[in-house]
Amino acid sequence: MSQTKLLILVTILIILVISIWLAKRNGVSAAYQPEIAEEQHIDTTLDSPIDFGYKTIWIAVKTGNKERLVELLNLTKVQSSNWESGIEFAYDGGVFITPQIGEWTLAVGYSLANTDDSSGIHKLERTLNLLSNEFEEAHSFATHRIVEYHHWIKSINGKIQRTYAYLGESGENIKVHGVPTPAEENLNLFNSFSPEAKEESYWAREDVTTANEELVMRIAEQWSVNPSKLSERNDIKKELGIILE
Image (cartoon, rainbow, N blue to C red; front, top):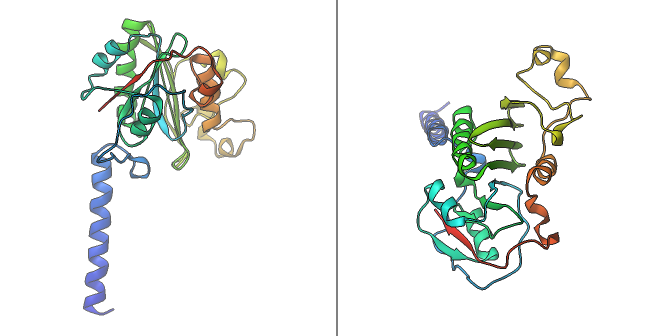
């Protein structure tokens, strides 16, 4: 191999190592790190609810007090927004606090949490405990089909009751805590921390349920709100939401 080709190969390897290190340092998988839009017109014209939920994180809180929710999430640059602009903003790296949906209000956007490791999940659990301590109940859900990351977390009165987080990219759970809720009954969820998982045969069992985005939606619907079916509801307040960073 010539010295020129060797130098090119070494340079590529150095760039690759630095990129991986930066992604790990930022605490989020490069596969689904959100991009923040430079400029976006925010519309405040009242509009109809927009379905969402795939490839994002959201928090469901049992309250209609959006302003207090903003305070507890400790976010800034608050601005009113309708559904269309709000959801677009959330998927571009910001956060959208939705209009009230029944008893619930949702905060949506991947910037709410970095959850690709146990420390990120633990931080999100602390946030949910803070919210449920004031509002009685708070949940978090996430899906991302590219890396097959999925989670559902429930906190009641300041205490985590249930956490299930799975990263299909590695084929392992990030965290499993608490007793399965009625929404999870008869699922026999995959658990890489279980004693059975120590046996090689466990990983090929057909009676074990692996988390996916549709399962996340089903559990969200039974716990609080399924955001992929908002257009089917008739209990959503005709009001503006809030965008923030």
